[in-house]
Figure 1 (cartoon, protein in one colour):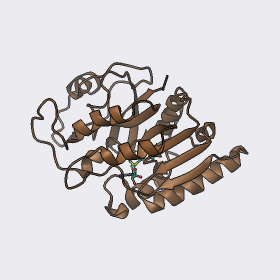
Figure 2 (cartoon, helix red, strand yellow):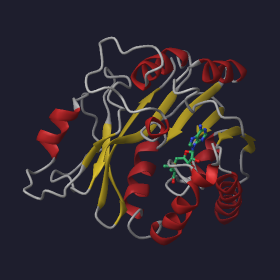
Figure 3 (cartoon, protein in one colour):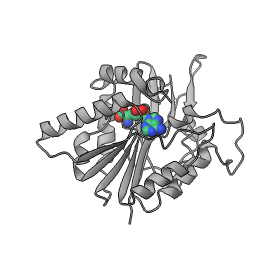
Amino acid sequence: MTAGLDPTGGLRYHLRARRYRTTLWAPFARAVSRWLATWNPPERELLLVGPSGGYCLDLVWLSRFERVTVLEIDPLARWIFARRVKRAFEAAKLAPPSLAFDRRDHLSPRAGRFVIEPLRALLEEHTQSSVLFCNILGQLPLLGPDPPEQLPDPPPEGSYERWLAQLVEALEGHSWASFHDRLSGTIRPRAELSLDLSPWRSSEALVADLYAETTDETAVLEDHRTSALAPKVPRAQMLWQLDRGVFHLIEALSITRD
Ligand SMILES: C[S@@+](CC[C@H](N)C(=O)[O-])C[C@H]1O[C@@H](n2cnc3c(N)ncnc32)[C@H](O)[C@@H]1O
């Protein structure tokens, strides 16, 4: 995939970030920071997956790790991320963690199928690492084929839903956390979203509980297919207003290794 044309990020994303990082996106970045402060993995290493330029992360939070390996396929994002980390740590007068970039693509579908082996192999290279997925798990399905109307249960090998279940198995023994899209569209959730943990809800229940009915025929709400991720784990919720009139319901969950 060419990162510049990547539907999950690319140049357009950096331009948006430049425009909105300190305005429209600021409440979301604060919510991510408050949520991250509640996650205390014992590992001294972190695999940071898809952080882009780190626009929505409290970069100084990375000081708790000795070594951070960044998985980011966009070269411009890697350059911006490294520069922003340097500046954030200089401003905080702290020594940054050692930073390494892994440019390989461990996540994109291959021949239209999501396969867990590349990520599993990577985790075997980083047995002592915790893992943070940065708003990427709700974007990856955009890179694969559309799902059928009705997914069989259990979901078939190669489907994104099956991959999410395999991902949780592959992460066994690691502390890990993810914040990711559940739903997005032109409708703003009516209810206040809370960082207090709540149980998994189906997408239908989220729509019924959190969104007002609308008569606007142009309204759209997209399901990002992250429902299958660790349904037994309670989760926090946040609102990310990506752009004027574009609202993302973000869920965040974390697991701390024993
Ligand atoms: C929506 S952006 C993440 C936003 C980011 N967390 C922030 O704070 O602004 C998704 C990121 O995932 C990256 N990405 C997409 N596919 C990837 C892959 N297969 N491996 C690593 N990074 C990937 C994109 O380049 C993009 O920077």
